[in-house]
Image (cartoon, rainbow, N blue to C red; front, side, top):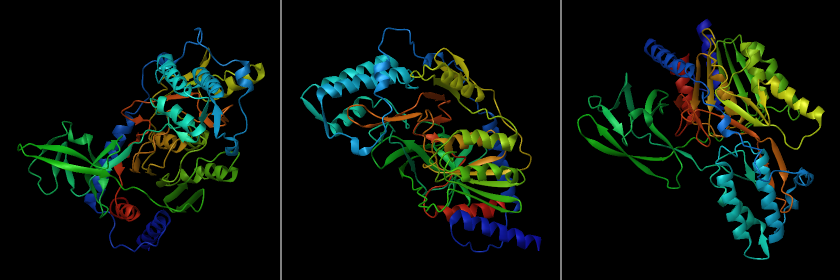
Length: 491
């Protein structure tokens, strides 16, 4: 009877994940599969245990506000914070107005943009400003669409996915490439083609094989290795050269990976529990002022989550929201304050002069472990954190839609033992935050920017490239593959 109940539980959980009725299966994970997933879990634990924020100083990213360069003044702040309305965008503006707005924009970036120094400071931004002004000065008027293109063209050295001008983000066009036509196997540290286990792969494109060969779930739900690469290129194909120990070489072709889940979101939040397992569907980092019911339910359910031996966090459709929710969840689940795997530098609001409001900002920053130094709040190299979780397991499902606060959730979970991420690289939208949004004063173009730098080790997280999963899940019939994987290895 107990075995039958377990079978029913796993069928129900995958009905939720896949959105369809599962076909009953006759076998659970065998001894070999259990041993394999155990070894993989230990390998992932070892990797996550070594995660930490960069140890270098954040001073190099602090701007010298004492120099004689123009910053925001009272006149500047008086024209800010207009309610944004798309209908108010001008079709064209005079070159005089455009030049005024450009100079205002660059004073704003210098004064409050958290990544100003990170992206080159005055040397890069002044050069960009001069180039924009030179192109604007050709006629008496300029179309706003053309003006917007000029701003993006000359600020293209920025790859901050939270920065937006005119609804258009500064996000690098990075795509995941793969090839699932050939399976590869790994024996300790050696890689082979599945059909030829006697000829070790020495290198791929001059690099160690594990740079490209990543653990993945095949069409039968079994673990294998496929080649993957995150590339910033417009072409839809690339070729990599494989060198074998025998001296043989061959070329493999990678194409854009398929990873669209095409899932219709029917609920913001769902918590479904079955004995020792719970499925957590989290489609937004719920804002307290927008979805208070979902937020409260999510935090209330932590008490039950702690009782479960297995949690499945589905973040595949979560594009972000309120990052503070992650801190609250983590503290409730672990009884520890979250120490993320990045350092933080944030500019104190320059337009606030009221002492009471400044004190409130200082207290708010302090509550999140940030110290103050002049015009900056910072948390440099937070303490290393890796917490025990008994024999509990957490599986995190990610996709390229998993962005911003959802990526912060993915990062936070890696500080807990026995956590496995399955899917694709996350969206890569985490180096900054969208602290402020407004209408630009003359064109009416939407402007969104952040006053923060969240500084990662680039081998772990890179903007637009995201956080790499522990196990890739791409190709056709993704939910079927996931269902088969859990049947074979987990239950």
